[in-house]
Image (cartoon, rainbow, N blue to C red; front, side, top):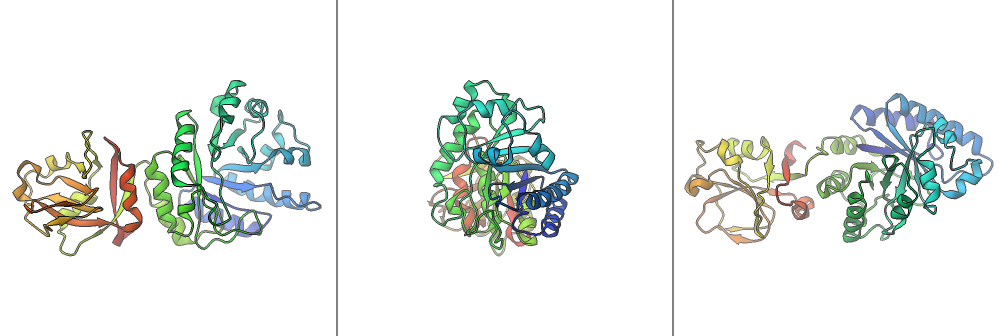
Length: 365
């Protein structure tokens, strides 16, 4: 699922509702919000705003996650075995910003309100294994990374991949945050973007979402700050969440047929992989009788180039390659038809044997 965030204690009810309305019309299905910043003396007023906003989101059939911590239970007089308060507020999920000791999480999964318990998966600890030892309803436990308002504090890339993989292998549904480059509203007084990954801070929102999709480790992608622009919302909504995608720029002179081969087919990497190229070979069967004349057959191939075998390449005619590292094309058997845009080149590393993938034309994106 794709999701957005709103903060009714920082924005007006009308602003939140208008944003939810725009997002749901584009297909966004999750909503994140936070109760962690309840201010003394304003509890009733703030909760009224939350209830109104979440009621509208519920009308739009959004799956709503509410950020809480152990201290909030005491503030609101809520017990671990009765989450009705949060359900009545409009939430479907309680996200535990801080972990308990395992037993409370387990008890929460049996609550009659039917709430899901979302654990913090940005910490590579044994807490979830500990929680599982208390025999929770596993189907009611999901996971979500933190976001990081302070620059240079977001998760390191390798750590993110390692930690997420660990939780994914436990069978948890996973979520992570990306950050709008125009949104200024978050749960805290200070924020310089709200991404989970530091490498995503201030880069194109669609590229952030693509990264998470292409890892094949994240189920739900949430825009952490409000309010993303209409253009950002639409660009992310265009992505296919079920398959890695590369945004590409076609080279001048690329033919209509070459563009069709690239854009109108599902590609997948061969199982017998190599270090030089990702090979989409089955597409050549569809175009074995097509005319693929030599066209821009550059003598040297660079990482990120997209090639198609031409008429001179025998049984390899119409085979599509993504170049993984520099190599010669001295025979001129491969036409260079496109290049992956710079922000997408590193996605090459995520493509494993038999992985499916698609291409997006930058000019139409």
